[in-house]
Length: 412
Image (cartoon, rainbow, N blue to C red):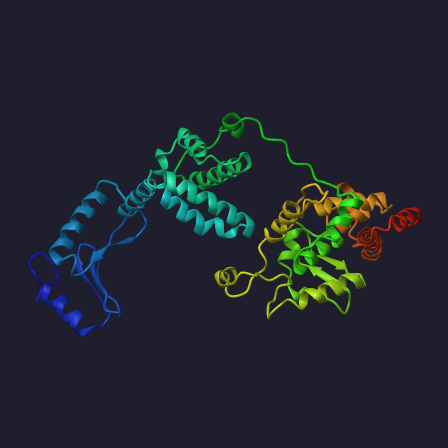
């Protein structure tokens, strides 16, 4: 039975919902009652706007009753008669609501759409600083944030010059994302200079070249054997610390005397030739491994459990072992980091007569200029010879055999 003022009645609606069959029934004037196969009932308004026949959902039934739906449809038809497009108005209202985002909402969106696309190390760094931004500015509206808020954030965190710069970079990327979503017209981080806040950047620490005497002491240092082996491998191959710490046994081909390093953001893929002595060191390391995929597995059970049960050694472990040795035994060795082992290898290789290009290739540095573009040769045999020369030099340093070192330099 039709109700007064329309084609539908509340009784009909209830009967259709009880029957549970999908349907679409009009109440006149473009107002339509729809029922899906899943039993969801809703009101839809179909209207004409120019040459288009769009439709918009008014809301669910029975949350919106028949009389309320008719009133809403009447209001929308009046807006259409005035030249307004209800769907366009709804989208504008939604966009205006988005402009009222808080910084916390912006950070959530940035994590989901941008942060996940970045390299792992960058994600770790940015996540650390996004937490600082959220703790300080999270409740503010995105449009409320001013440059003074960013300056206060940097000042109050009291970080080192380098960390403060990274905090600024992270915040700048976050609000660039806001500008891209048109939540902002200007990035509040633009124009801020860390040097103006904290003074000039401290001098960058220069890389060390350990002397023969320092190498002798290092190669004979009383350390836990896995740490000593890790240092020997780093020093003998010149690989980056992360390349060894994240290395997996599936990439170490001992029978071939070859270690494959996969491509990463710090360098292309590379095969490192392994001399027999290096193969022995890898075999010795393998004896310390207990069902791990990693050459240097995590030693703390808690670290492994946090990373799915198996992960690599912390990047700080070897550095801490070096610091402990220097602090406890006070050898006549300047304080150095694992990365200084690369500069040590590079410098001594040049002194041993290894060509510059070959030493650069041993460090997995890309050749510069036109040569780097056209020269795609891996120089594997040449690198094998250079690394063999370098390893012999290290063995002579360990033994303290200065005459053998001089003889090797004369041959080179």
